[in-house]
Every structure is written in structure tokens, then in C-alpha cells.
Image 1 (cartoon, rainbow, N blue to C red):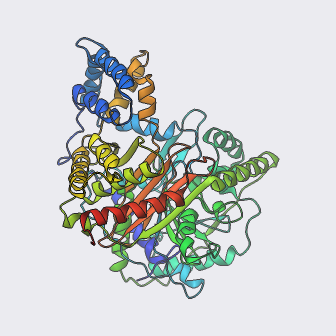
Image 2: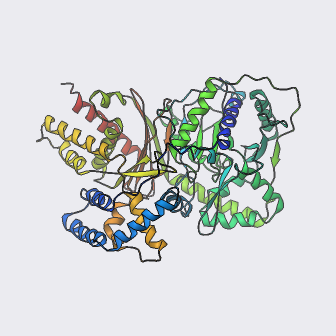
Amino acid sequence: MILGSIPARTCRAWLLRVSLRQEPCSFSSVPPQPVPPLAQTLQGYLKALEPLLPPEELSHTRRMVQEFSRPGGLGPHLQEGLERRARLTKNWITDWWVQWAYLESRQPLPVHSNPAISLPRRDYNDWRSQLVAQLPVEYMRGKPMCMELYPLLFSSCRIPGPKHDYVAHYGSSRRSPTHITVVRNYQFFQLEVYNSDGSRLTESQIHGQLLRIRSQSWKTDKEPMGILTSEHRHTWGQAYNRLLRDKLNQESVQMIETGLFSVCLDSPVMRISDEKYASRKAAQILHGGGTYSNSGNRWFDKTLQFVVGEDGSWGLLYEQATAEGMPVTSLLHHILEYCEHPDPKRAPLVPLPMPKKLYFHIDREIKWDIEQAKQNLDILINDLDVYVFNFKKFGKDLPKKHNLSPNSFTQVALQLAYYRSENVCPACDIASQRLFRGGRTEYIRSPTNQALKFILAFDDRSVSREAKLELFREAVDAYTTLNGHGIDNHLLGLKLQAIEEGLSIPKVFMDTAYGLATHWKLRTGQVPANTDSVMCFGPLVPDGYAVCYNPQADHVHFSITAFNCCEDTNAETLSRTVKETLCDLQELLEPTV
């Protein structure tokens, strides 16, 4: 099996999946996303607040909710508007969600938005293996649901704007792009991946072209153009307009934006201890390691960037305005399956044109923009605390053995670990909505009342093991019942429906309780896969954590991030607490004495 930093086989595998963009998506078996009943959502909202608010504040919020939901009041009126929108659109919340969650955000894409998937390190004998390497195969459980997002992943790119961004999709044009972008040592290259007769390049052809790119990019460019895309979105939008005043720059940027995807050939990650290597490797995929490392090898606006380093570190970085984690990891699964069973075609004896280097005209203004972006990105990277570890005591087989949902088990464990470090906090897990036509994601809230009871009892020595075990089961089961019953999309829809109608924002959304309930101090996500990969992303709030985990049969991979600017958070400290908590829960289920 061949693949690597931009393994030739993987590149060809990506190309085979591009055919998805030409296949019509069948929605006959995918129902439209219903608008939940208003009473159900508001009741769920109040229940979610019970573990977080003191009784007097909760009573105040109950009164506000009752006023909002009274017959003939504002709530039922907005509900009717959402139901009307659901009848007239493909999906009543997705467009609003993408605009609100991603495109209107002005924060930089690295750390704050773009997730990374760090894959198991490969052992390379020399630099040639960066271009041709052996890949492990990642298997994902479950079949794709709504397929609409898959063709949009290719030949797409986020474009900065003054007030909000937009996503440009070039794959559906009459003349769809036929090239990818390869970047090495801050230099961008346009690599055509189709022959003149329309056939895809073979594996050996792609490998030969990559060797040519390597021979043309020995020295690092003085000006890392890709760094500009790491800026605050308003700042980058202004620099983008200045950059495109020049025709040469227009042509180069267009080639990057329209390419099927990008491949980033990185220099080695700085050697450190084995214990911290996994964390450093994940950080490299996430943001490139800084302006003196590989950050200049990224174009953070690009939807798909396949990253591979000479030292064997490799993974995938993606911009999630087009799609969240599960479609991307499912796509990656298909790619790696192809690598297991490649198409052994011989390369035709026809010489290929040299890959085209993309040049930029850098005037004084653009040079200043790059310098500012370099400073700001290094500050952001130095502020991010990343800790990746493999918990080896047990995996998902343990909760399964005791008839407990592995994901719900882990969620309650994370709540207990956070409580031991801090206190109870608003937390969210990310659940897919792709069972519905055009569905994206929904937040599943924790803690529940049942989880709070268990958390308060667990370290209380006066409570018997039997009682703790019963409370634990109740907490896990309560979280399991929440799946598929999120409330946040509906609440957001009601708020945006009011804005759409030119009404004042309802008081229930101006309440301090709503602000508290949406200050996600614990952002979590399960991204299961059959390889030892782990997803990594930044916290949603300055004083919060982001925890991602990949459960295997007998171990679990975790990534935890926090910001160093907050004195109350520390990724390594929470990691230790998570490990201790998981061991304590194992002892609860299977006492050794």
C-alpha cells in the first residue's frame, strides 16, 4: 500500500472520491428535519438549567419561559414562522446555523474553528517515503446518511468578507477544476491530476510529479503567503482585497481556492520526548507549529488540506463551514479503503507538463500584512495548550460489558473529572443530524440532574458503593436518552426567526441564564475510528476546555486543549484528572478488593 505526506496512492484515492461531486444525491430515504414542539424544547431548556442555577434564578427563568410560551404570545408566533420555513426550505436551520456558527464569526480559523485529525505516525526510512508511504486503514462504523455534503468538500474554499464570509463551491461549474494544490516550504504549486484525455493520473505519475515539486522547492520562501489566512477574519478580508488588486496574485489565489484539495508537505516536527510527541504532532496538524515551523504551508480557508511531514506525522485539516467531523472522517475512511485495494494501472508513456509554481507579487502593504499575521498567529499558538494521550487501562468494551453506552459513560466521566477540577459547568457534545435532509449537527447538553446527583455522591465516603453504582447507571442512561433530543438548534431558530421578522430579540434570550447556559466551558466530541487517530480542536470560550476522544476496544485516545491565558485551565492537569476518574469508574464497576 502506498501513501504518505501526500502519498501518491492517497492522492489518487482522493481523486476517485471526487466522482461523488458528479453523482446526484438521493434524498428519497432521508426525511426532512422536523421543527420540535415548542413545549418540548422549552421544557428541555429548563431541565438543562436545573443543575447549573440556584433555585431563585431558576424560578426567575421559569417565569420568563412561561411568558414567552403563553398561548397567543411571542413563542407560538415564532414557532409558526419556523414551521412555515420548514415547509418552504430544504432544511429550516442548516443555512442559519452555518451562517451563525461559522461564517459570521470573526475569529481566526486556526485553533478557533478548523479541526484537525492526527493519524498514527508512519515510520519513514528517508524523505522519499514522504511521497510514497504505507497507510493504515481506518474503518468507520455506520453508513453515510444524507450524502449532500460529500460533493461540496472538493473544490471549495471559504472566502473572507468584511462582516461575514461565504463558501465558494467550484466543483459544480461546467468546467470543474482538474488540479490540486501542493505546498512545500511555503511555496504553492498547481498539480494537474487528470490527463488530457480526461483520465486520472496514475499513482506512479502523481509520485513523479511530486518528486518534481520537491526538486523545485528546496529553499523556504521568505514570505509565507498562507499565514495571511490565519488572521482575524476582518483583517484577512481587508488584506485579501489588497492582495487581489494585482493580476498575478489573483491568478495564484484562484488556483488555490479552486483546487480539488490541498496537500501540505511539512518539515519534521521538532524532536521531543515520546510522551509529548503525540501532542506536538496533533498541534502541527492543527496550526502548523508557528511561523518558524510549518504554518506557512497552510491555506486555512481551504476546505480540505491533507498534511504529511517528513518525520511520519500526518493527518487532515479541514474548514468546517462546509461539513463537520463525521462526513470528513467517513470520507477519509473511503480513501483509506482504496489504499487497501488500489487500482494498479500502468502510467502511459506520455510526458507530463511540469507542475506550475504559483507566484505572488508582494508589495510593501502585503509584506506588512504578512508580518502582522505572523506575530498574531504565534501569539495564538503559544496561547494554546494541547495534550494528547492514550488511555490504556480499558476501552469501550468495559462499558459494553456492563450494558452501558460507551459514549454516555465517557460523557459522565468527563463531567465528574471537570467537577473534581473546577465545578459543574455547561457542557456540550456534538451529535450528527444527518439522518435528516441537509442536516448538520446539534449540541447535546450536560450535565443532567442524574449526573449531578452521581457527581455529588461519588467522592462522598458515606455513600455505599451499591448506591454510587445505581446513581452512575442512572446518569449514563439519562445521557443516552438525550441523544436525538437536542434543544439548541431550535432555540437558535426561534431567536433568528425574531430577527428575520424585524422583532426585538425575545427576553428569554437576553436572560443571564441563557448566557450562562451557552457559555460552553466543556466542549466535547466523540470521533470513533478503527485506527489510533484523534481529532483536535480549540475550546469555544477563553476559560474552557475542548475534549475529543476516539474509543477503541481496549483503549481510548484523547485530545484536550485549553488556553494558557486562563489561569484556571490546564490541559495536562485535566488529562491527569480524566485518567484518575476513568480508573475510579473501572473500580466502581469491577472492584479489585
